[in-house]
Image 1 (cartoon, rainbow, N blue to C red):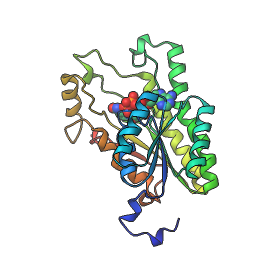
Image 2 (image 1 turned 90 degrees about the horizontal axis):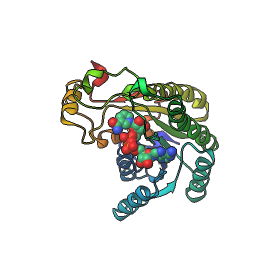
Image 3 (image 1 turned 180 degrees about the vertical axis):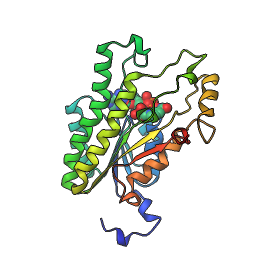
Length: 267
Ligand SMILES: NC(=O)c1ccc[n+]([C@@H]2O[C@H](COP(=O)([O-])OP(=O)(O)OC[C@H]3O[C@@H](n4cnc5c(N)ncnc54)[C@H](O)[C@@H]3O)[C@@H](O)[C@H]2O)c1
């Protein structure tokens, strides 16, 4: 990468880059795929849900974007390896890997008092361990390329504890396993940044605050009061910071935990 030849805003461009977004057909993932592709990248939707993945590929290809769905289960090492092999075979390299999948059991998010050890084990295994396994495998590919950008999805709840008062008047609560998983992913990101620096690979985490998804009005009102910007996030709010971290404009940014939370953690 010869950065001196690149002038702004070219450094923000993702032309000639290949990106993989795990969970790419989800609430946030689909806007990341859109943003990365609009910035010029070829984007692989690494997604376990075939129907959602194929429909999204179709929608974005129709818009003229370079997007392809590939089946991925982040909790299965063979599935991760085969997605990486297939992508490299087709596009020669993977410049950007974004861990944005959200595997969870049907009882995930139950009250802390009701959480079973099986549920805790399964969720930590699929989510936190899945992110770590994806990183382990993509780092081997990026080492060969001597460059790459990895972005792990954390959360405000990996950095601060929840304010349970925002759930009053609803049947919602805040998952204990989620705090452990996201806290783990965030500090693993620092570990990996340190491990990968000498290979030219950057590793950062994005921590969104709550994203609006038609939650109960009372919850939304309570949530909004806790943010500096007075609103919940939109999936589009997350795409810009991700594109920045993925691009050469962030060439000196690694090991960073990037809060994208409307100021929730600022006060
Ligand atoms: N939505 C929020 O308010 C919010 C806030 C902070 C952080 N986050 C984080 O952002 C990321 C994305 O969240 P989201 O709200 O878009 O979730 P989502 O549930 O809308 O989407 C997640 C996607 O991951 C896919 N998936 C599930 N298990 C998988 C697996 N094993 N392998 C591959 N794909 C799998 C799902 O099919 C789905 O399309 C997660 O890491 C989440 O913790 C979300």
